[in-house]
Length: 359
Ligand code: NAD
Image (cartoon, rainbow, N blue to C red; front, top):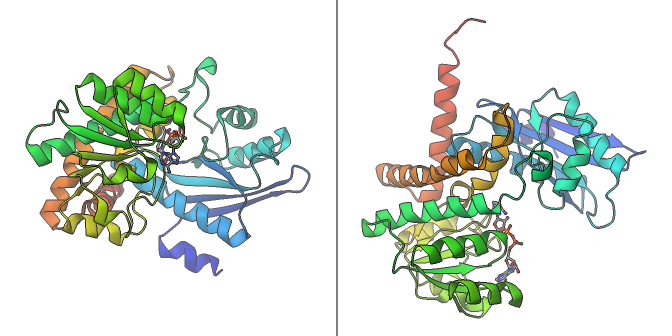
C-alpha cells in the first residue's frame, strides 16, 4: 500500500501504528480531520486478514466519523482505532492498557470509545492509562448503553421524513416495518407504539420478537420478508447492506429510516432509491444518537446528562429536514446531500477559524 497516496485520497491527517509484543497489541489509529475538534471514534477489535486490511478499515471508519460528527452539530473530528485480534480470545488487561498509553501519548488528538468487538468494560481498562476515552458505564458516571438515545434520534428522523412525504410528521396510523428488534429496534418499537403507529417486525431471535408482540402489539413476519412489507417506513435496525440489487425491487415503503450502519450496499443504491421515489434518511445522520450520547460525556465538566442528550438527539429532526432541503436544492440523492451538508459545515468552521480572536 502506498500509504501517503492513500492518506491523500481523502485527506487523512494522521495514521499511527501501535505495536507491543509484550502486550500482544497490534493496533492502528487513524485520524481523518480535526477541523471541528479532537477526533472521536470507537475502537474496533477484529480478525483482519492482513495489516493492509486493518489500515484500510481504520481509515474508512475514521472518515465516516468526521462526517457523522459534522452533520450532528458536534465539535469533534473523526478518528478510529482498530485492534488486530480475536475479541473472543485475545483480550487481556495489558493489551487494552498498552493501547490506552498510546492514546494518551496523542495528547487528546484522538478520543476512543467502544465499538464492534470491544465493550464498556474494555474502555474502563483503557481509562486506567488515558483520559481520552468515553462511553463509560453509568455506575462510573458515564453515559452507558446508547441504544435508547439512538432510537430516539431515529424516531425524530422518521418524523422529519413523514413531514416531507405527508406534510404531517405524526406517526399515528402510519405503519413502520422494523428489521431487528434488538437494543435499538426495541426502543424504537416502543416509541412508535406510544405514538399510535402500527408495527410490523422481524428478527432472527424469537424472544426479541415475542417481546414486541406482547408489549407493543406488533405483527411478526419472517426475517426474509420484512423489507417486502407494504408500509410507510421500512426501518433497518439489524444489518448493513440491506439496500441492494435484490431487495430494492421488492420494497413497498415510502421512507427508509433506521439505525443500522451502512444500509446501502453500494453508493449507487442511494441513487436507485431516489429514482424509485423512496425517501432515504442516510444512516449516519439518523443513527447519530449513539455518538451524541458519548460526546456528551466529554463536553461538560459536570458530567453526562440524559435529558440534555435527548434534547440534542431531537435535533436529528432538523438535520434530516436540512439534508432533504439540500437534496432538493442541488437535485441530488439524500445520501450525497448528507455528505455535502457535513462538508459545508466543516468548510465554514475552517473559514471562521481564520479570524484571530486573541489568546
Ligand atoms: P443488537 O445486536 O442489539 O440488535 C440487532 C438485532 O438484529 C438482534 O436482535 C438480531 O437478532 C437481529 N438480526 C440479526 N440479523 C437479522 C436478520 N437477518 N433479520 C432480522 N433481524 C436480524 O444491535 P443494536 O445495538 O440494536 O444495533 C442495531 C443496528 O444499529 C446495528 O447495525 C448497529 O451497528 C446500529 N447502531 C446502533 C447504535 C446503538 O446505539 N446501539 C448506534 C448506531 C448504530
